[in-house]
Length: 219
Image 1 (cartoon, one colour):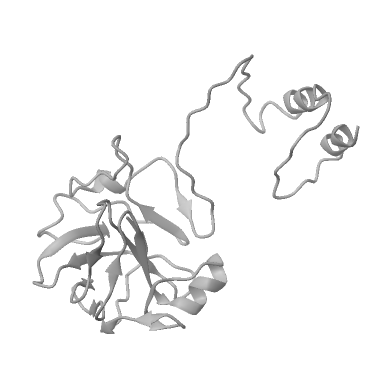
Image 2 (tube, helix red, strand yellow; image 1 turned 45 degrees about the vertical axis):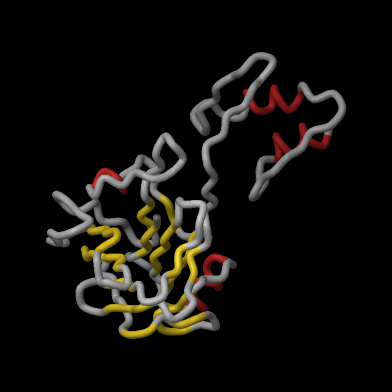
């Protein structure tokens, strides 16, 4: 579901997801880049409707994301994969998910990879920039696109390490709706909206540096 290959540190990762309502026993399954193969240890279970994240260095991953990985390829205080250490190339490479019979379950190829085989068809997906994460696109049924092509991974948004990522939601609104383009429209529409509050107002912000907005909130 996600691959972080062009990492700023040694915490590149791959994430696999289970769309089914039953857990999957991954004992004997593996990840390979064609040069090294890392195998899931005994009693590795991918939860129903869950995900597992496998990173090269779990300590670096936790420092950068404030989250714990599930498996480490090399270092960190989590379960360690057996076998080799995958070194995903920034310029282009491929990563394959294999079951216990060494059959390709899924694949992702990017950049200058020339991989042609099970799980992938056609050109490689666009190479991610430094610090960017390749994310498989969502399908209308709530799962992911899995046509074994580059377009499954090429969305409009560029995801970066540490960014929030929430699913799209629908809202029912009673009243007028105003679309505002920031920063082109300036702060006038926002100030007008904030000034309309009569009793209370809830604010969620990463930083607040505008004295004009702060003054309206104080009032």
